[in-house]
Length: 141
Image 1 (cartoon, helix red, strand yellow):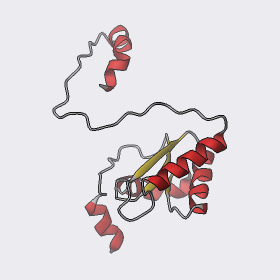
Image 2 (cartoon, rainbow, N blue to C red):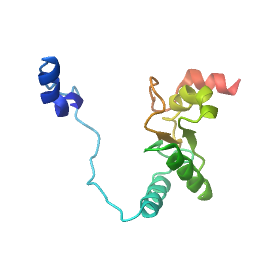
Image 3 (cartoon, rainbow, N blue to C red):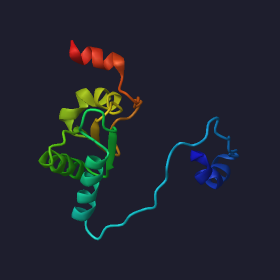
């Protein structure tokens, strides 16, 4: 899957062939068509609306992981979500977030969790659907 898009480059540079491996289970992901917006504000409004529609920030809602391209964009989006009553965890390259980085990512899969992250944050930590029980136990104590 993932390496197939770079198969030519991997062969030219490293002399490696890429072979597709079929999935063991049917693919459950639904792919939707791309959507383009004329302004950043329109895109952000649509994003907040979608997070609300899937229950982000609510008990039992879907976990939502939102990727942004800059620290400023992530901070603006968290503020916009807060205006709508949606609590979101902020995961970006700001020094104040560094101590909790792996904890935030580990809990991003909890029901209703909303996590806004820059594309440089959260390295090396898996997101577990339902959250990480070990981290939850540590947070509660």
